[in-house]
Image (cartoon, rainbow, N blue to C red; front, side, top):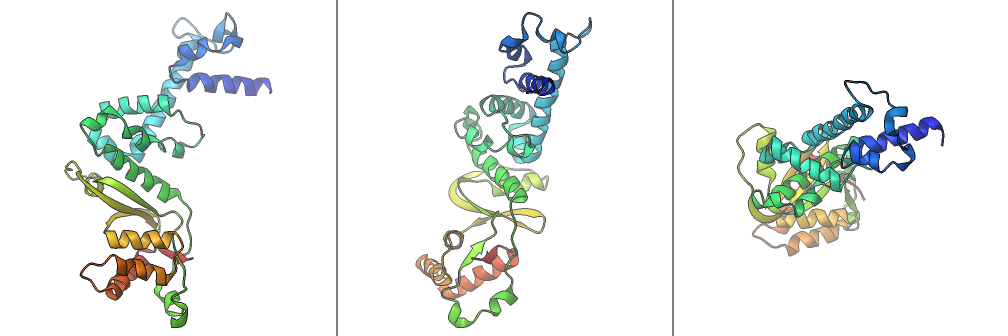
Length: 269
């Protein structure tokens, strides 16, 4: 490894040290007695360690700002101070391992599942899960969506065996708290209320350049799950029929199909 590469690696380890530059320095045995003094120039105003510490603080606050951008509703619920403390603990447990800021929040919802802050906001992990899904869907892969004309061109005899698929970036989340209205209120800068308890599923998908989300009823959630696993159209119709309800299964299937096409959800399986 070249001298420059070694220097870059050292500074990266110090700047990203979970417990701060001081403890990071203590682990760098190869630096010897003079520590950073032979690498970073200090003076009476700032020591070498203090100068590196400035970059470490900049690193943390850049991650904090990125997480605020990705989790605005979680921030709104917790407030600045609690969110700051949350991120501090989160980064200690899940230090970034990738150069892109895209990855820094990928474990936040899981971290919140067992966090004491759930005592005051029991829905917070589900809220963060939806916000993270929005980020992933926005950056996820795309595919050409099926439209009505494409489906009309399919011969009636071919419909039962037809395989449909979901946009590759779409996600269906199973949640214990109804957080979508809270999230929408924060996005629209309206007063929000705590989420209510209740098992349900949320669809997150991208249309054009926007990540969208909405709650699914049981029948549509089951039907879309069948679509996502590559079921044939006949099998999807069977799922819709099995869910029962007062609506005629044919009418229900036609209604769902029309909405999926309008949402740009479907691709050829």
